[in-house]
Image 1 (tube, rainbow, N blue to C red):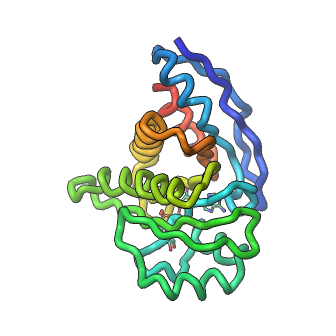
Image 2 (spheres, protein in one colour):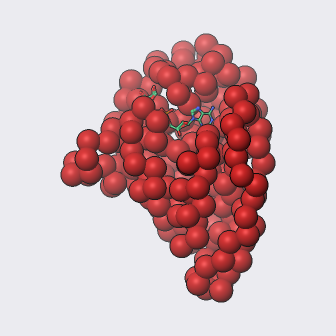
Length: 203
Ligand code: AR6
């Protein structure tokens, strides 16, 4: 049995009421407990995090948008858009990396989640690829600490419980096969998403 304490720091420019951390238990073995010690779930604004890389839930143009994409571009400044213009867009499920300019992070990894259309168009695989490809790109760039927003859970309308399962499962699988990432932080923007991640994390 493994036990963990979900690390819960709340820092947000738009405060949302979130419940305090809970102690969870699961029936997984010691292998999972080592992997899970590298995963944190925190509430707040991803643009504030001092990590090696933050992940952007972008669109295929990589030229900015609303939601977390808009927040990242606003906080990073216009040089981010200038670098994104050189990248030629990004297909869904893939990832591209840029510098982070005025952000406290060193890099932004831009990935494009699937737009939810009912689940029969490979949305789950595309979403899993976002996490996988972002983590691979992180390793290629010597990133040790990385923060993800809830990709596709806003404008792209992915069901949150399913998306949280994919985020946690894909990340665990990656960390089980690769020891070059020290910390993966899932940044949750509200109570509903926090609850979904907490549930997915509890096996
Ligand atoms: N920090 C952390 N999470 C955030 C922040 C923030 N500052 N702002 C929003 N979220 P969304 P998507 C959460 O819509 O569904 C854009 O226009 C938000 O509450 O940003 O993948 C792109 O250009 C939600 O839980 O991304 C695309 O066109 C999560 O981030 C499209 O939206 C993702 O919501 C992508 O849609």
